[in-house]
Length: 120
Picture 1 (cartoon, rainbow, N blue to C red):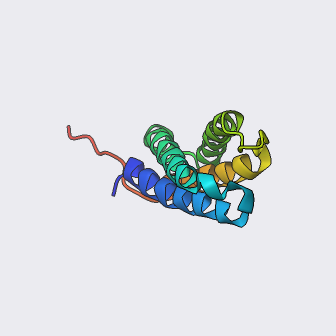
Picture 2 (cartoon, one colour):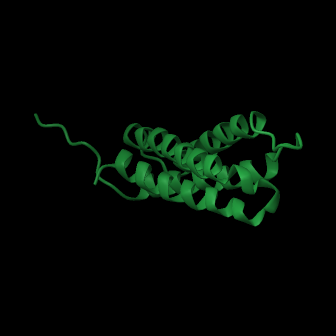
């Protein structure tokens, strides 16, 4: 399986788990559908970006740092634009799982998967 596909799969699964983790916060019960869809989509974007990066650069530390950066950037954008009905923002609750997802995807895409081979 190629690295971008691995990134997409792992990103989507971890994004879904991240979204389902919002059930721990009773104040966001009315927004759960949007949270789950948004988290899964955020995981897909992270996985695609990190998987593409892994095809270009063969460095585990760089892959993890790139995944961390993409996860933080996407999560920060989501956190900045999605207050709850009372107007509270959840930066910590959104950005920490996004950063962890990015790190895991960065590790997995660097460690596993096939790169495209060129024929002479």
